[in-house]
Image 1 (cartoon, rainbow, N blue to C red):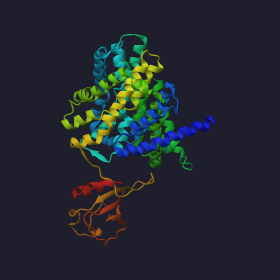
Image 2: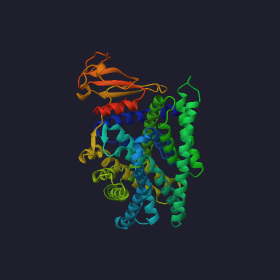
Image 3: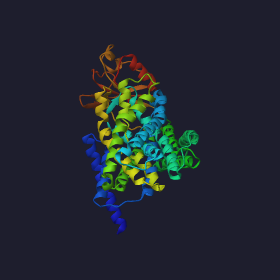
Image 4: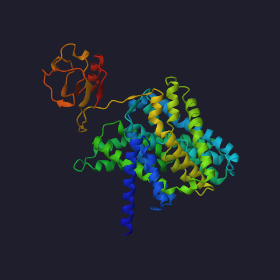
Length: 496
């Protein structure tokens, strides 16, 4: 009966998480915050007991591996190329600055808050665990909002959140070792470790990404296409584990591998995208529920935790993150002050800081429970204050615009090279005549459907077009098509 009871409770948790996610979307709150709340509620009511930091750490590792790989797959290199330098700067220097500023703040205020025994190394460790923005939170919030961001802000924020975990991981592991051994900080060793981990992680990530593409396209298992998802999942896990075993940073490697896979043609791309999207959501739900179950609400509400967590959370949001952001963005003049302000605001904390806060517990560091509770509370503050205002802040700073949605929803087989585009008909487009045959389109291009007044129909050469019509166009030379319609002054063009 034990196994049936476990399944029953697991199903209840998943049901609660799904309905919480639906409620979060309507309320404009991060779904991950409510997933965390579901876990805390079930734990507080003693419906589920969970007290294994090792298992929580393992689930966190698996979840982060897939979240980063999937996030890389969904990121187009053409989008991040213009902001590569600024994104990498924020992911490295930004993390170190945040950790240093917050660590100094904790060390200075701890005696005044009646919290004794916090050395500089301990304060820096607390800060390091929450120095990176959380990819799961940023990806889920930005991609669930049907809202565009100016000045390439969305790819910048996604690149930063997807690639800054390695820096925080290195700092956390290094400081855990220092605090547990009681040694002083060896900055030269820290720099060497950082360079080796980032270099090995970057090289192996790119290499395994290319190998994954080659395997996916060469192996012939089309008779059982579902196995392609399992194969790519194995490639992601192998990339992470092998890189970590040779002193590289597995989180960086798996993100870069996903980026490579996502920017090359692979078999059954659409099916793989659906699988990884669903699997990522499942892992996020499980991860946040487990982390919610692990925390003790009574410990979280202790005065020393509340005061320290509240002070650190507000300091990080309103001081540390803005100072680190504006400092790192100084060389990049193309970003306006409003854009820099928005970047500093979307410094969301989520699962990653809580996972890293488990490391002191699993390493037996004195006061590790206090560290975990403070980090957990800071994460909740960040998700509530920043996570609920991601959209509103963009509107307030006049950085948002309505992201157009395609009228036509299509799924094309991956082996077909032709591409579909949606074109909005304008008056200037009809200056030679208002029938379909009067429109000059490149060779190997065909208008296959017209959308007008909530109706779809297949056009013929003599079909009259009107401004506001939407055309579904298929072409073997999509770049030439897009260039030609741009020359005609047509702005409503998007790939389907």
